[in-house]
Image (cartoon, rainbow, N blue to C red; front, side):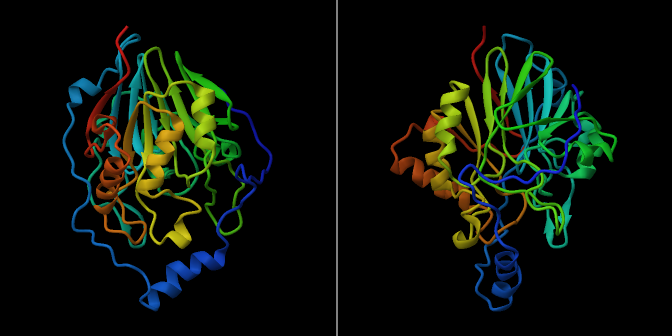
Length: 318
């Protein structure tokens, strides 16, 4: 993997839009809370959790075998294919900051991980770029433009990618694709680093991880440009209230439309039931997704809502 330095950027979405203005953030986070205008969604039922077979996870599937996907929780995945083990948006921390804690343990702990070849980071928000987790794993990073210097300070080599560019991790191709979102770590760095999703392609499987995204017309283009997608890992939570969140996150109904636009074979739900980031109940997203799936008369076998720690096999044997 190679690193290249980057000057200071400022990015926009494909439609030219930029992030929510600070006044909207403050209205939702402070004013609406104080005025009692926010829905107090229950945290009583987080995502269920199972324990994976750790012995099986030690060795990634060889070339010619289906890929193996393990949900660690939130948007974090262990993706194993063609002898390579990747982490996407790894977060093992118990807290993201004041008032935001984990409701279900990670499906796999750092100590239980196999040897990791690379860590893929979709964007720099703290529930996707968790420095303690990335440091603990300590492996090279693949991320969007503008993040090399950030990771260099942490002694983590970084390969930067623009939208539609790609790199290799062993025999596996990693392509960075657009999403409709934004980036920020501090008060003055809005949109200075690029956000997006990843397409991970091996000999027998092509896997799409959207990262954080609102619904946008780019899903159709992604499906057309990258070829048949075996599994689309799509977010279904963190959408309420719509006036604030719809410009940055999808609700379950929009995620179902994104799946259709992508032309993917299998929908895999993520980004729900782990942290309480927004106002909906923790267990509402899967119920809404199931209702929308039935309304669209889609095959139930094509929609997977795994538990944390759940292991999926994707693709065909050679």
